[in-house]
Image (cartoon, rainbow, N blue to C red; front, side):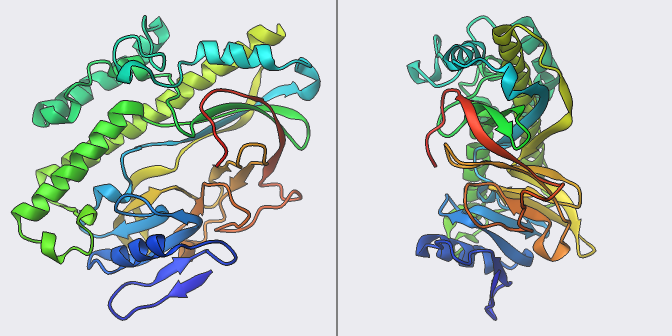
Length: 370
């Protein structure tokens, strides 16, 4: 770890030894560290890279404010992994039919600009998906009454629950070092999370201009919302809603993927107690060093002692299930992107807190090499 100190900012703790730390990302981190409401320090992950407003691979704690761009628009994006009781011997030699079965059970990609007929959303919504969304519906409607522009054009929100999306989102059937079969997938809050994040980022910029503090920001994307104002509360409510949608989205897809696996191999793929469902783009109220703060993690997960997390590898590389060490000076976090370096403790194959996946026997749509 390197500590970058500046008398005009909080320290920057960067786990970047032996990995690229490009100038654009460095400048972004320095801009954040100069803000007067940043608490303690800014943490930087080994896979840090430029993002809108704040870098991807950063952890930022604030007092009395929240910066919407610090978490971005892919609200609640994260990973879910489930170990099954199956082993490699239970899988067929030809995995292509299994891939096709998973792809048929989980809408993925995007067509028709996300409108009617989009292959990445449900046409006729399955009853269990409709039922799952019911618990979220009323809260979003209530928030939309106060912020109608937030969900404008989002009439098909429930059509995206249980769908993968595009970009680097993926579904995988994996083997660990004991040849046990895992199902893992990466996705978030889909289009509605993007709408909520984008809306409040722009609203924060409007507030900065309205109250004449825009000129004092090192980057206009670092516009913030002040605690004690209605828009601050509404933003946190919207983020919480999107994070719950993302969590549920991954659970629904996990059920579909396991059902497809069972149908293809002709037997029950029972699941055991090892399951992880964690965001790596999210906002949370936490207490660090005896102080209540708002923590935004963008490409990072909380790693309190015993917390389980997932560090995915690039396509064709190993991924890891990790257990947090709860190192408070590190803000209890670990990075989530593929890299050879580690933050918050390095896992090893002999560690009982880590399971490495030896190979990926099946891939589904949407993943490209990182």
